[in-house]
Amino acid sequence: MLTTLQTSYTDTRAGDLAWQLGGEPLPALAVRDLRLDGACGVPGGLRGTLQLRLLGASHQVVLAAGPGDCLETVACLPGRRTPLPARVAERVAGWEYEFAARIEELPPYVFEARAQELLALVEGHPRALAGVFPGDPSAFTALVAHCDDRRVHWRTWHAYPQEGRLVCTRSSLSLPGTGRPQTDRAAGDAVATTTADAQAQVGW
Image (cartoon, rainbow, N blue to C red; front, side, top):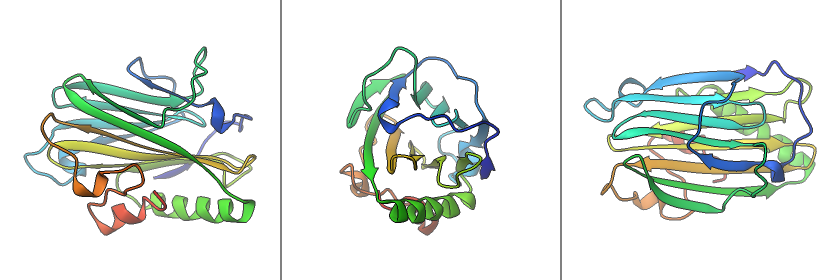
C-alpha cells in the first residue's frame, strides 16, 4: 500500500531519529492493520493484529498477539537525542525482541533509483505500507512485515534525499525458544519467506 502523506516535508535528519520500545501510539498520518492469521497465511499460527503506522518521517509498529502487546517507535522523539542503536536484543512482554539499524549514504543518482525501486516493490506487497511526501518522490517512509507461526518481523526504510541518507531497520518478535532462522543470523542477512518478500528487502 502506497500513499501520499498529507503533510509538508520537515527538514529532519537521519541523525535525529531515536528508537523506543513501549509507550503509547502517536498521531499517525497513515495506518495499515494486518491480521496475523489471515495476512500471513499460517492457519493455526499466531493470532492477533499487527499495525503499521506512519508518523511523518518516522514509524510505529504495534503488535497485539501472543504472550503480550509490544510497540516499537523510530521517530524524532522530544527529549531523546540518543542515536539509533546498531543492535538491540532483549525480552519484552514474553517475546524475544531484536532490532538492528544502519544508515546508508548514497550519491544522488543512486539514492533516487534505490528509492523508486523500494517504493515499487512495497506498493504491491500484501503486508506493507509506504508514504511519500509531497514535492519529492524520493522522500518517504516504508514498512514491510512478515510472519510465521511463532515469529513476526518487519523492515523499514526512512529516506532523507536532502542529505542522501537512507535509514534501514529490521526488527523481530519471536516466541521464546523459537531460535533465529539460518537466513537471519547477521545484521546484513535478508529474511525471505517468498520471492516477493525477498525482493521487498532490497539491499539488506
